[in-house]
Structures are given as structure tokens and as C-alpha cells.
Length: 244
Image (cartoon, rainbow, N blue to C red; front, top):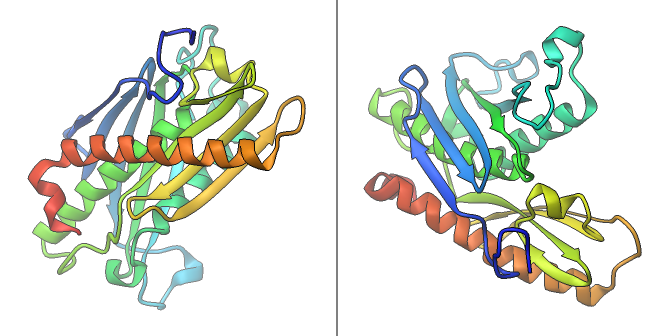
């Protein structure tokens, strides 16, 4: 039995609240069980120096955890004066994943900043960040189309991320913190709505795992991605028709 009574192939409850903030071109509160992340998308009319005069845009991300998003207070990275390695890795992952489903030339010489702020963490914060960031990116692009910045959306496909793992020899979907901390194998999968892989990262925490284990985890992850994308589509409703 899992800590919260879920089946092995069942996601935590996923709730996406759009337009969570009034001030951003796109904003979302995504909740996956007890993990809650605020994602915002901001459009800037310039690109990084390495893209200057190349007539294409960029998508980049920042990620952070509030001091009391965890059971004990953590220090803000801004106070320590440096961004940690884990944070940098997650920021790069979010930006890289979102860029994989966007035609950057259609975006023009603009940057879309994605900010993901974890307000409560119970495992899967980067999973929630990417899945929520896609929805707020969608809304920001919709704003750009309506305001005449661009003529049509550059988004080519849906995108989501999910975690899978092996616990006590059994493959399970969408690990909460209690499960993640004891998993024998931890794997994270980013996929598109059309079923193409963006990233697969799997690590044995104890004993090595077999090819059969790997394939079972991939299949479980595919199911989880489909379920998350179904929630994304439901949250977007008729607005989701503009892109694909």
C-alpha cells in the first residue's frame, strides 16, 4: 500500500488554476497532491546576446523554493549569494523542455521568462514546475497573439513531466516525498503530447535495474504523461484549440 492509498499507476490529484496572478502574461498554480508551485510567464522584447540579430526567440526559466515550502526552514539562495547546483540543473531542464515544443523563429526576437516558485514541496517539484509552466506558457503565447506581437502560436505540441520509480520491487507512478526518499530506482520522464521523448533520466539508488524494469517504468511514465496532459487540456478548455 502506498502512503496515500493510491494504485501503483495512479497520479496524485492534479489541479491547475489558470490566471492565478493578475500581473503576468501567463500564470498558473499547479497542485500535485501536496506539492504546490506557482508558475508565471513574462514576455520581454529582447533576446540574450548570443541570439542578437538571429531573428529567433528564446525561452528560459528560473526556479526557487520558498523557505517554508519544506518541513524545516531553508535559507533563500539570494541570501547565500549564489544559486545552488540543483537549482541551476532544474532551471536548465525547464527551459530546455519548453523550447523543445516551440518554434523559436515564430516567436521573433523575444524572450519568454518562466518563473517557477515552489510554495509547498512533497516530492516532484520539477515535475509540477514543467507541467504547470507549459500551461502558463500557452497563456502567455495566447496573449502575444491577441495583442498582435505574433500572428499565430509557435507552440507545436503539449508537454509534461512525470516521475516513476521502483519501491520494494514494484514500479510506481508519481512519487511523493516519502516514496522518493526510499525508492530503489528513481526515473523522470519528459514527453510531448504526441508521445515523443524530451528527457529520460533514471538512476538506481541501490541495486541496478534490468531492461525489463526500464521498459515497465517507461510504460508507466507514458500513462502518467497522458493523464497530466488530459488535465492540461481540460484546464485550457476552448483556449487550447488555438494552437494545435
